[in-house]
Length: 151
Image 1 (cartoon, rainbow, N blue to C red):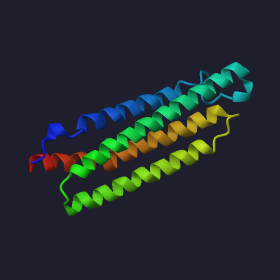
Image 2: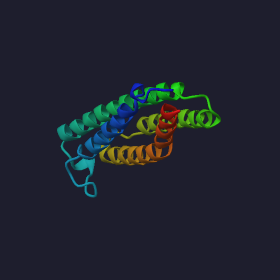
Image 3: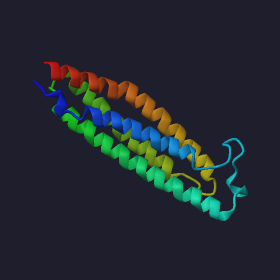
């Protein structure tokens, strides 16, 4: 029997909250309404501050995601090797690799002259990804872990 208190379930839920906080932080970087924000109209000092905040926030999000993936990986390694668990773990790990590739591509293609567009693109990507990943993979992982704990 797997001891549920041993599993990092609470930490995985906290990861989701922390990631949502960072996505919300992205939305607060630009002080102008999103529909009217044009970086070329901002003074250089404001633009540079926004760019620095964007870089800091995206680095923090990536760090949080990698820590989240490590926690999930630890949990996946401790699941019983049932067919359902094996299939889930393979798909879940693939989703992590896919996220990393898409996130890195998104960040590497930014045009620093238009920080507002970068903020919106990152915010939208992260909101969609967190929502989809948590609903699909993390919910199933929690279910498998709970089943293992009861077995």
